[in-house]
Length: 255
Image 1: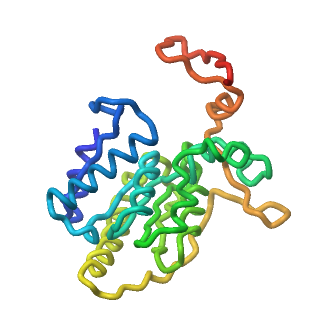
Image 2 (image 1 turned 180 degrees about the horizontal axis):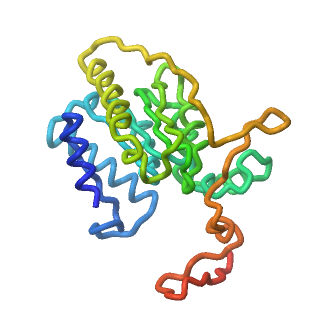
Image 3 (image 1 turned 90 degrees about the vertical axis):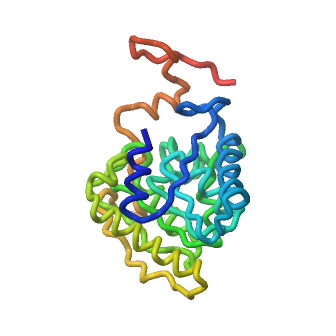
């Protein structure tokens, strides 16, 4: 399914694309887990650097949605030219936080069980970071991308792209010209850095945020996820039973 977008990236931007099929996903064998995705993306990196001889500074990791987890880990451990996060998440548990700024939120209480802690890892990046997130995203709320952007060290924080009309899976389709223009501009800076030229992050203009509000106490109020109840059911311990055709949820005992 991703071959079309990969081909389009290569053709429009003049780059070579190495796609990673994570264990247990698509046609890949193995078991899906965060640990396996980390191993898979590191194996792809080692293949490019060791086998194909690609200079690390000419490699840009691109992580979309769940893929933001392994991509951010790679950028925090390996030498890269840059990191692109497309509709990223702050962390796995933070996606389902009912009150993301509350004191006893799930991601705080259960932090030792959290996975893909991107918000902690972006603070230690040593390469340019470019974040893209649609403000109408109802799967991973927009504030995830915005806060990751702000958490990145200033010297590595490139201006983000936060279109007001885009959702989770239609960021490219909403405005294809703007999308490729933004990505192309970032890659051009990465190319110059790889050539040994000094490139400072462009002026980071605060995004025009239309999908969030400001509460009476001055704090930003945010949408915390889909309004169709799917995350609320998960918080209560209800998950959709695999193979059920009636669409009903099965109660799962919490261990």
